[in-house]
Image (tube, one colour):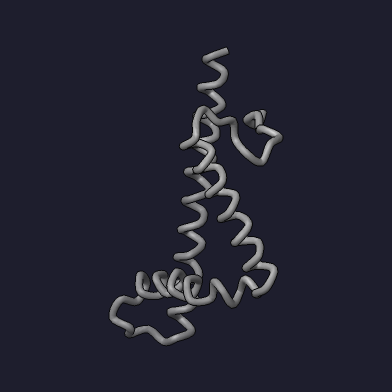
Length: 105
């Protein structure tokens, strides 16, 4: 079962510090949506995505001796390994969270 979510955009507050923090989060969300309404996400994230993907090429061919096609092929597999490991860790965390919930009753 999923965790219970609040229906309000603002979280419950216990003081002025919490209210300022909640307002700051809302302003950040507003700015992010406004930016994505004006720009294509592929343009705004292109450099970061290229840097992320280049790490796999550097991992499989640190000396740059492989042919470009082979380097791309191996980097693709290294990228898949990375995401499969993330998925495995996520599954383990969800299982552990479910078991903790079952124990608490």
